[in-house]
Length: 324
Image (cartoon, rainbow, N blue to C red; front, side):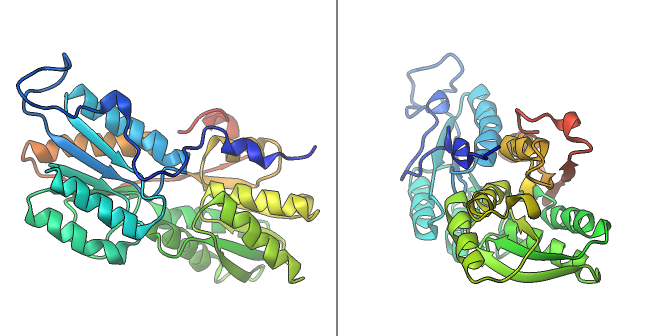
């Protein structure tokens, strides 16, 4: 059966300068009530993930948006499309709009610090999701998956059967979440005699970059038996490259996310495993923290949401059609 990787592009949100969720957009917060749920003096919540070209952020965002909408507050969502300069400009724009809370996933944690420092000077609460900042004290709260342990889980499974495997790693070196997953894997297999890492290929966690990156590596003639991608989008790109070169049946593929497409590939015995994240839970926790901060309550500095390994043995427990 021929794998059609292009199906994963259905429903993917195209990158744009600004994406606003209509269901929660309230531009006017004056004396006229435009919604039965809207407060007269509403809070403004600004959000900037690193990209919306990843369903993980769509699912996470739905939970936050629903919470903000239920409180009758304004929700402003911007999409930097993996462009760090664009993210800085968009955050400045939201600060000019006098937001009360900034929820952000840094495109580049090192270059984001000045924008976050401005936010703190202006009394804006800062919540970092799915990553972390260069200065751990600058955020009121960081909420993310246990990304390092996701790599550990994949590393343990990869080494468990004792068979010799030469790995290609698909990376995203400016995203702390991706760096942690890859490092967790590398630290875990460092003492495994049967695991060798033969290459690390940058792909920014994007399907359309992972496929040509692996294609180019295959053309060098270097041998490998397995691929670990920092996320499931990149893993699907690897699947496409491997199929194109007739290598799919003899290569193990691992990812991180627990996305429906990846779980479908596990069911078809195309992917070996994924370390599942729980974007619904991260989104709900973020929504709760937003309103705890606005109420002046103390919150945890860091909240780690565990990941869980999903393979053919336990796939039925998670289901193929939905995120966790």
